[in-house]
Length: 154
Image (cartoon, rainbow, N blue to C red; front, side):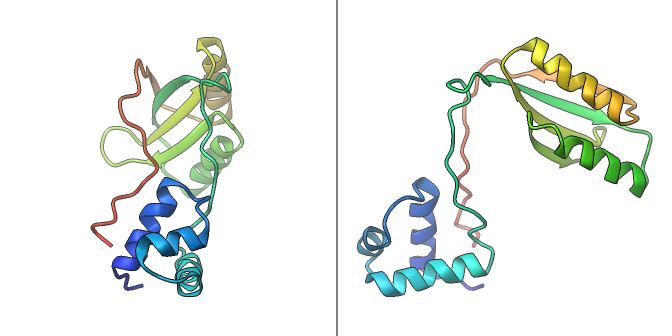
């Protein structure tokens, strides 16, 4: 989908606050409500806007400990991949999963209240799939966190 400056401005507003009314978005970008709404619908239909969500405070929900988990496996077949992906999908504390290039096969982001809760997640991982190595790194401080994607490349 080709995007113009209006689309990018709309996306910037929605990335900052998806609850902004369409009339206000239109006012900010210089469009009336109807064309602004049509653009938002097109962006949703194109899959550029995947979902509108509320971002929650992890500390307020007693899930303020972030652990980055590097996983290596000696299993590189589709059955193992399906098993592992299903296992990780069933663990709500795992908020992100990436298949990596390089020495690490998978990188997980896990959020928990404490080390004991992470240990329970760790045990689920090692009991549920054959893993060659699991390495955990606990985040000491979050310096930057954003869900906003750069729009200059669109």
